[in-house]
Amino acid sequence: THRMSDGLPAETSGTAAEGVWEQRSAYGPAMPSPRRGAISATDLKQGLEGRYRSDPEYRASVDRQEAERRARRDELERAERPLVTDLRAAGIPVDSAWDLYKHPELGETAYPLLVKHLRLAYPDRILNGIARGFTKDVARKHWPELLSIYLTEDRPEACDGLAATLSGCAVRTHYPDLVAILENEALGETRIYFLRPVHRIGNRMCAGAGRTVIESFANDPQLGQEASRILLGRGRND
Image (tube, rainbow, N blue to C red; front, side):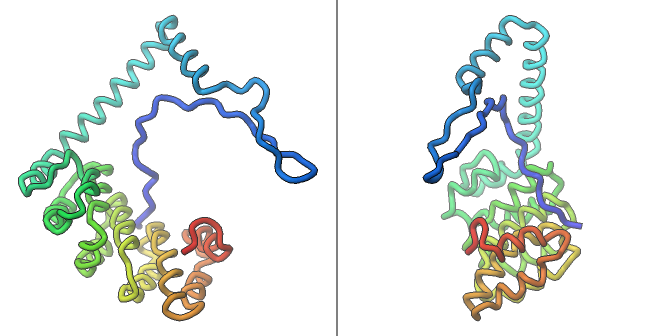
């Protein structure tokens, strides 16, 4: 069963404490004011730096986490090297599949290489990057092949990336495929990507047609929450 990606690994070093904001006024929302005692990002950073210098145990923990992050990054770079080598040999100057957005004019050149490497064994993050590396115009041109790959792919991160790519390039001629994807429960949570395109394109084709399809998924255990948000007009509702 396909699922949505839980997100890409974040290289973060900490989060600043945030205050609780109050907005009370007899005449409407007041200007927000930070809670008494809230710690600013600058103060927090200075405090952590001071602790790093003075607390050997804390310093060892931070150093260990940083070493682990570097090791993961180096491991991903080594794993992605075959793809990067092929892309560079084709004249595409990138260090990762995630850099392909910088060269949309080379989308057609990249296409066969991405398809080739999408079928190979890679870590999840790299697979997701490959599947998202197709430009809109090229993905639209090669819709039948990419759709076929998506429908038969069983690796979650590849499915997630392909769903993002297909939903992002869909136009009116793809509408029957979009509806069929929503109806295919085997595709799991990645179907969420296709709700808004169905809503938008369907409504443009015939007033209310897209909304009617979305309404049929309002109680779906995987799609219901997002379908309801669309029907209520919450968030980006194109």
